[in-house]
Image (cartoon, rainbow, N blue to C red; front, side, top):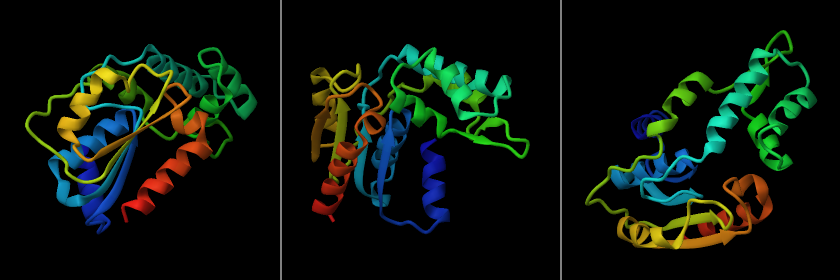
Length: 196
């Protein structure tokens, strides 16, 4: 996926970018910054760390629930939300998950992302096989205090790979940007402006 991002940056003539990613996307932007630091001005990682982590059971449930929305050929957001409510109680997270769905020409909700491919790829997604690389640019890690990912035992690895990192923690679970969007965006805006 990092190679896809590098290709995208080249195709769109984006030579030095601010990269931001959540969870698996956080792994992708970290890999990209380590492999191609020449393309990255600043790095923002939303609730992920540069170590191998166990994939939370929630992800598989989310994929299954979104597949269920598609299979049922639902036509209202209320119906789709009811399906997701079976696996996720937080309305903000459900609303965020529903941004991955769109109505087709017949009004049926379909996924914008390849759910089957995502579901089949979940096992290896959180691996971390990077050795001996560093990104010296400004890096912001934003973690959820109730999430299982950004924990003190990972701080040493964060410093080893990203020596110029800052850490901000918000009172959320894993979906930091969905649970506290205003606070999250303020942290991002302040970081980008400070390092521009």
